[in-house]
Amino acid sequence: MPSPSNSHLGEAFRSLYFHLYSNGQSSRAERIVEDMTLALLVKLAAERAGRTQVWQSVLDGADPALLLDLAHHEFPGAIAPDEAFHNDDAVIRDALRALSDIALDDAPAHIVGDAFQAVLGPRIRGEKGQFFTPRTLVRAIVTMLDPADGERVVDPSAGSGGFLAEAVAHAADRGARVEVVGADKDFDLYRLMTALLAMVAGDDGRAFHRNSLDPAAWIDADGRTEQFDVVATNPPFGARIGVTDPDLLRRYDFGHVWTRDTAGAWTQTEQVEKSRDPQILFVELCVRLLRPGGRMGIVLPEGVFGNLGSGFVWTWLRRRGTVDALLDCPRTTFQPGTDTKTNVLFFTKNDEETPTADDAGGEATTWIAAALHCGHDRRGKSVTADGAPYPDDFADLAAAYPHRADGTTAWSAADLTGHTYLVPRYFERPAPRSADEQALLAGAEWVTLGQLREAGLIRVRKGREPGSAAYGTGDIPFIRTSDLNNFEVSTDPTKSVSEAVYREHRGPIDLRVGDVLIVVDGRYRIGAAAMITERNVRSLVQSHLQVISVSPDAPDLDPYALLFALTLPSVRHRIRDLVFVQSTLGTLGKRLFELEIPLLGGPGPWTPRVQEFARVITARDRLLGELETATAGETFEL
Image (tube, rainbow, N blue to C red):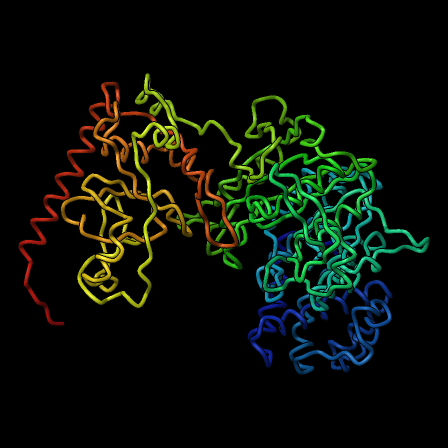
C-alpha cells in the first residue's frame, strides 16, 4: 500500500467520518468519533501485526470483533477486551473500506497530523474545559520551542495529541527524531491520542490515561519526577472545573493561599485553597516536569496575565526561570468552541531557584508580540467569502521569532519589572500610526486622560445600573453599550425607565450636553464612543460606560476634538491594548487613564478634519431631531 498524500489521507478520514455519520445508528459526534478512533486503531493493529488477512476477512464478511481482539493486543490500554463498535457490522465494514488503500503506519507525521486534526479536531468539544487548539497556534508554539534531535517532549493535557504530532513533524522536517509523551484524564481523548501517536511517532510516542495533576503519575522507576526538554500544552481551564481535592492541592505551591503585602510582594502561606482553577496547577506541574534549561510553551486564559490576583504565579515563575516571551492571541483563536481570550507563555527553567527579578532589583526583559489574526473567523471558517484564506499572524510571528533581536520584526522587548499586568499587548508601545495619521497629527501634543483629569481639564464618572426591574417602566432612555453606533446614541425604548428611577440615579451621572460617552466594559464594543446632545441629555447611562466632560477652560480641547481623537486608528489600537479580558468579558478599568490622545482643539493640520467632523455630527443630530418631531404622536399597526 502506498504512503498517503495529504489530500488522500484527509479524504479517507473524511469519508470514514461521514459514512459513519450518514449510515450509522447515532449522529452524535462523540459516538462517531469513538467508532472512527476504533477504526484507525484496528487498521494500525492489522498493519503492525502483519495480519492483513484478518483485515480482509472482516471486509469480506467476518465479524469486526476479530479486528478489535487484534487491536486489544496491540493497544491494551486503549482497547478493552470486550470492546465493541457502536454501529452494526455492515456499517463498520463499509466504513473500514475507506482505509483499505492507505498505510497509516508509514505516513509522514505532518500529513497524518494535519489530516487527523482537520477532521477530528473541530468535533472535539470542551465539556470538561478542553478545547481543540487550532493547528496554526499549535504549529507556531512548536516552531518557537524548536524541539531538537533526541529531546523529550511532553504534553500533560494532550487531548488528541496535536502538540505532540506537530513536534514529531517539526523534528522530522529537520532530519531529527524526538520522543513524545502525552497524558489525558479523559479516556476518549486518550484513545484519540493513542491512535494519533501510533501513526506519527511509532515507538517514539507514549500515551497515558491518567490524572496528570496527581504528582505520583509522573514518578519514574527511580522514584523521581520525570524530566523533559520541552513542554507544549493547552491545559483545561475554567473556574467551573476547579480542583477541590485538599490532598492534591496541598502538594502544589499553587494549591495554597498566597498573600500580597502593601509593597506588592507575594508570599505563600500554609493554608490550602478550597478550590484552584486547573490551569494554575498545570503551570506548576509543567515547570516541575522540565529539566534545568528545559523550555515550555503553554496556552493560558488572559485572566492569568491580567488579573491582579494571579500575580503570585509570576513571582513563582521568576524564581524558577525566565519568562522568554508572551504571545497575545486574538479572541477568535478558540472560537467557535469558546469565546475565552487566551495568550501564550514561553518559559525556560533555571538550574536552581533564584530570587525574582523584582526582588533582586534587576530587569525582567521579555519578548512581546500580538497576533491580530489566527487563520479563521469567529465561526471557524478559514476561507473568506471571496475564497481567500484568512490571514494567519501566528505563522509569521513564529517564523520571525529567531530574528526578534534584529529590530525588523513584530517582536519587541519589554521590561516587566514591577508590573502586575502581563497581558502582552499592553506593552506594545507606541501604537502604530500610518503615514496619513502622522501627517494629520503633526505638531499635536499627546497627553493621557489621567493627566487631563489631574489638571482638572476633564471630569470622568461611571454610569449606574437601575436594575432590570426598572426596564420598560417609563419613557426616559437608559443608554447601554449597544446603543452607541457611529458616534450616535440610539436607545432601545423597551429599556427606558420611569421618572422616579431617573430622579433617583441622575445625580451622580449628571449628564450635560457635550459629554462624551465611551464603552469601558463588555465583549466587543469597548472603545465605542458617542456624544450627549439636547435630544438625549435627559437619560441614564449604564455602568459599562464612562462619561467624560470637557472643561470649558481646557486649552486645545473641546468635546468634538475629544470624540474625534477617540476615533483615530492609533488611539483605537491602544484602547484594544489596554483592554484585559477575564474569561469572555473585557474591561479597561483604571487603564482608561493611561490612554494617550492628541489635543486637537487648537489650530493645526487636523483643524479642517475636526471641524468637518463636528459639522456632520451636529447636522445629523439636528436632522434626527426634526425626524422625531415630524413623527411625534404617530402610531403604526402591523
